[in-house]
Image (tube, rainbow, N blue to C red):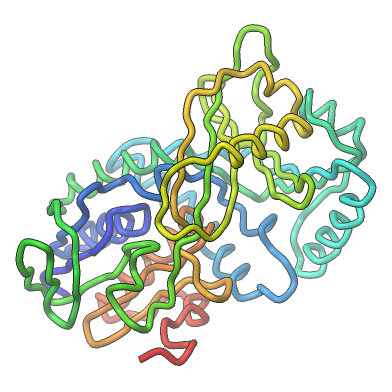
Length: 362
């Protein structure tokens, strides 16, 4: 049993690790100047390993599905400890806007069925009866995908962590090692450290080949003259760019997301906003009547392959980072794996593929 654990980073991964570890009896300190913000705050909230899947990424799919299986228990425990995170079981619909897109949809459907995943292909007329106002010539219904209100989730995790005695330190870590974290203002001694600093994790350990991928999202709200948001998450590719619409309570809709290399530039560009709105209007024309309530940008923590880095880097130093677009999805399995290692137990077997030394880093 680790007596004192330091978690560097207070996004969804860091907060999940801190809450689960504290609930298991560890004394936990989180170091982050803005816990509950960062990329997790501007995420879409999709928990969708199935519709994110593609041939060649079977290890990531397996890890994502294992985490998805853990989500209902994770959400129930979190509701009891910190508040309802807003888990949705409505599923996902993947839309083809034209015949070319429909061919790609067929490839995805065939692959998913080959690995035993449940999908249903429907024609455009059926799509419009299920989701009024959504355009498309064909669609895949994926009932197994979940979604979560990312901001409710972060607030719930923060409250649950505090309830279990987690301490929060408003400071940036600049170096970590066995038994210590050096910060801007001093040094914290501990028995173990978890690096969960998202896109900034690479500066804390040379084995973590993590880089920022900028993503912009928009938040909109239905008005009296518009159709309500779709009941499910809606995904499509418009002119080669992925677009998703994720409904929220109160008639809100999250629209995302751009993705490109821009370092740590967190400004929102006019081009990204235009591309998102134009793509969404082709998919769901009523969005033109919605109120635009927020634009925001965040940094996905991308690795060089489709897998995160989860595991021991050095004695007593653990990685929990590099989740790219799947941080919210993989929070339960990542937190459970870290707690298992801290307690001297075996982690979920799917985590082995995310070994932080798999790329040869030391």
